[in-house]
Length: 88
Image 1 (spheres, rainbow, N blue to C red):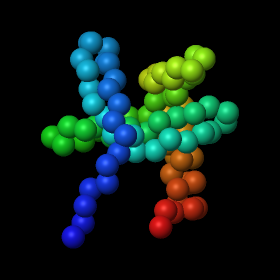
Image 2 (cartoon, rainbow, N blue to C red):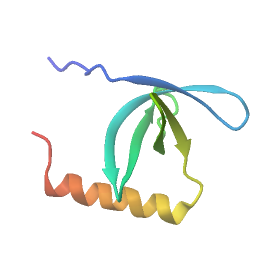
Image 3 (cartoon, helix red, strand yellow):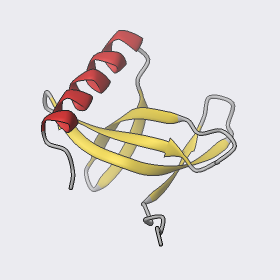
């Protein structure tokens, strides 16, 4: 029997002020920056979002990435790293 694993959940406010729930799919660092790969918790709209993790003292914030080329390059590099060292 296969069981869904429980993931960390985060709530993100979009540009229109809507609160959206996401599961944390992965946290990783690249070029000195921390990133979070999030998957929509809404099964009717499965969306994956990449956000940068910023720290201010003890607080952490998720910040959207506006440059599509940067986002694509980060996701491509992440995929190469995952393919090179797959999880068991």
